[in-house]
Image 1: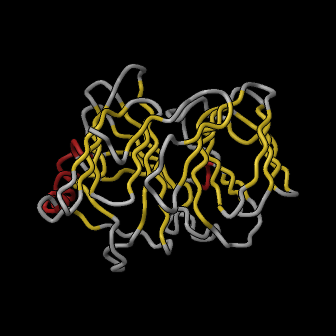
Image 2: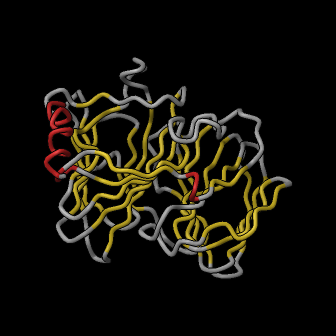
Amino acid sequence: MDYRYHCYIPAENGANSLPFNPCSLLDFQLLRLGAGETWSGHSGGREILAVILGGTAHFTVGGEKFAAVGGRANVFSGKPHAVYIPYGTDVTIEAVAPVEIALPSAPSDLATAPYVIEPGQVASGRWGAANFGRGYHQILTEIAQPSLPARRLIVGETFTPSGNWSTYPPHRHKNDNLPAEAAHEEMYYFRVAPAGGFGICRMYTDEGYEENFTVRDHGVHMMPEGYHTVVSAPGYTTYYLWFLAGTQRTQGAHEDTDLSWVTKTVPMLRDLGH
């Protein structure tokens, strides 16, 4: 079967691009540098959020210098640092220590200065309950960081514990029908801990297309359409960086109506958990 909406991105030294991309707005690169190595590029007509997955790097963005950004060992070791790179800007990244950086991007015409997002600005919490409870970090969202400028990008991280489901009940971002639903493309970039583990991701559309794939390190789920959900294999935690882009930055999602009753059980399940 020729899958439309998932791939595994290369994880070699340097900037690694998606082998294909069904989205019209979103794109993604994975940057890996050894200590002392440098990468330079230009944002073109796109805004980029450089999320430090692990390690530390110096950033020069336009005329701004941001020294020693980062610090967590990996995505499972605390909140991230991130650097917002505006459109039309030169950028140079120099690794202080070995570093991995996620580079989600989207078209932009927003004229603004670059800035650093510190871990203290990243909101955290828990969505869901019971075996569909999961932790999150909101890095650049209109809800948790309303004062941080961005044109399209909405970015965060989710941690799905052993045996748990995430993004459940499944939802879609198909129509601009605010506040209930907003039209967005979305991507997930995955990591799994401990090494050798896996999860399963399911995506399906109102028109009957369905795609399931094995979640492993450096898997990417690309969703210009469709409902989606993730489950972690027992014994393993799955991480995914999620990022969205649409015509506006107001989040809204429509749950699968056949499964949306599960959401109504969350308050009760949380009370039982206490």
